[in-house]
Length: 203
Image (cartoon, one colour):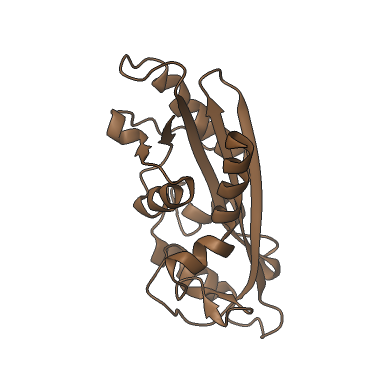
């Protein structure tokens, strides 16, 4: 089974591979650079938009056996209670002024700025992840998971990416950027959703 990921994010590719236990091919490695408009209203809708866009391109390839591949895409983000669930599906472009993705530091800083007057105890948040896998027959399988925590006032940790340095997990006493790869995979929203998908596909 060839697993093709609808992302070029090296952190996600690594996480996919660790959990599935096989090599995961970024779509770009197969010469696919489709970048569909993510105009869904939920994480699940956007994950399927990305998976199906890559799936349509994979079908055109001659070097991928028809019965031996699956396309996996995720859409994930940070949802902060005090911000009414924002950044939500706009997490990757939260600080953008033109609708395109903004960088991690800009997005993270915007959240901190918006929460500067919000006191401790009211800074609850969660990471959400929706995974969509489209098989060679075009059948979509969805999984979703969350991890709950709170937003701290300054960055801590060098691991991870995105909002990880400001997302504090009380039961670990660390931000997700301070967790080891093994710790993060065990509890992360993406790790949980990927393990659910692995169980469905290979049970």
